[in-house]
Amino acid sequence: DELWIEKYKPTTEIELAVHKKKVAEVRCWLLEQLTSKPSNAILLLTGPVGAGKTATIHMLQTELSFEIQEWINPLVTTDEVDYVKLVQCLRSNFNFMSYQSQLSQFKEFLLRANKYPTLSIFGTSTDAKPRKVILVEDLPNIFFRDSKKFHEVLQSYQSAGRSPVVLIISDSHHGDSNVHRLLPKSVQESLGVTSISFNPIARTSLVKTLNRIASSENQKAGREFVLPGKEAIEGLAQSSTGDIRTAINALQFSCLRGNNLSLLKKTKSGTSVQKTSWQNRLSEDSSRAGQDSGEPSVLSAIGGRDSSIFLFRALGKILYCKRDPVTSDKDLLPPHLTHCARNTPQFCPEEVAERAHLSSELLQLYLHQNYLDFFTDLDSVVIALEYMSDADMMSAVWMHRSLLVPYMASIATRGLMFANARYGPTPGFSAPSRGGWRPLHKPQWFEINKRMRDSKQAARALFPDHASNATVLHTEILPYLAITDAPLKTPGQIEFLQQIGRLQRGRSSNRYW
Image (cartoon, rainbow, N blue to C red):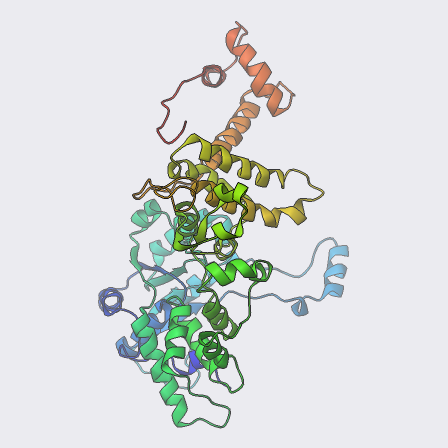
C-alpha cells in the first residue's frame, strides 16, 4: 500500500530524471558552500511542479553526505483548538493561551537550525559535525501577502547564518511563478541569491522512469497488478506534461486491475469515453473538431495531469482560427445563407476556453485587446464587435449574471471565429489571407484601472477638504480648479491639477483605429 512516489525515491543520479546539467549546477553550488568556511548563501530553485527540484537535493544529500533540516509549515486544525478554554480566557481580561504566528515560528526555526545541531535519535552520530543545509519549500502564507517580511528574515539570517539555505519556489498550475513577488531581481542581487531554473521532465526520461518502476513492480506483483503496455506508459508520460510525481502516481493507479486502462484501448477502437461538461453540451462540435479530446480525458480519469493550456496559446488558437480545408457546412445551409458557410474549425472553442482556466470576463478582455490585428476589413470588425457586445451584455444584469456568464466565452470566441473567416482566398470558407506571426498583448484595461485607482487615492490625499465622490471630484471640481485662480496650499496640489487639467494627445498606434 506504499505510495510509489515514496518507494522509488531516486538515490543516484542514474535514477534521477532531471537533466544532468541542472544536477551538476546544484552539485557545484553545494560543494562550494559546504567545503568553504561557514556559509550563509542562498540558492533559489524554480520551475514547474514535479520537475525534480526536491528530489535533486535529497539525492545529493546521499552523494555529498550532508544533513537536511527542512522547514515544514505548522498546521492548526479545529481539533487542536479548545473553544471552551478559549472563551474562558477571553472572559478573563484577555489573559489567554499564548499564540505563536507562522512568522515567529519561521524565525525561530532559522535560529535553531543555525545555532544547534540536529539531534541523533538512534545514536549514530560521530564526533565530526555533519554539514547542514536548510531546505525551505513550503513558505508561510504571510510571505505571499507581505513579501517585505520575507526579505527582512533573509537579510537578518545572512548577518548571522552559518548554513546554506535552499529555497524552492514552484510555478503555479498555469505556469505563472511567484518568484517575482517573493524575490524580485533587485532583492536577489542585494542578497546574492543564486538562481537555478528547472525545466519540465523530458518525455523520454519520464517513459524510462515509468518503465523501470513498472518492471520492478511486475517482478513481485500479485493478482491485482496489471502491467501497462508501451502505448499506455507513453500516454501517461504525455499526459503528465513533465510532472514526474503525477506520472508515477498515475502509473500506480493504472496498474490496479479493473481501472481505466482498458478505456485507453477502447478510445482507439472508436468506443465513446467520458466527456467534459462542455463536450456534453456540444457533442457535435467535439466529434468534428475535438479529435484529441478522447485520450486526454481517459488519462485524466486514471490520474493523468489535466492537459490545460497556457493563456496565449489559447488566444492564438481562437484568433488564428485554423480550419479544416476540406470539410465545410455549406451543404447544411439553405441557399440564402450560403454566405454564412464556414469550414469546420480544427478545435472546439469552448474546450479551449475551459482548458485555459480563465474566467469569461478575463478571456474577453484579452480577446478585445488583440483581435484587431487578425482582421483585414472593417465589415469583419463590425461583426466581431457585435458578438463581443452581446457577450458583454450577459454580465450586465446581476440577477441573471450567474446563469449567463458561462456562455460569454462561447459567444465571444465563436463570434470572433465566425467574423475572422469571412474573407480569404476562398471567400466565406477559409481563414483570412493576412498571414505571419503577430504578437499578443495583455489588456490595457489593467494599466488604466491601476492609474485610475492611484489618481483617486492621490486626489483624496491632496484635497481632503472636498467631500465629493471620486467621479465628481475628477470630472467637475478639479478641472474647474485647474482653469481658475483658486489658491492652492501645496506644490503637490499644483502639480496634480496641471496633470489632470491638461489633455494630452498621444500618438495613435497602428494597432488601433
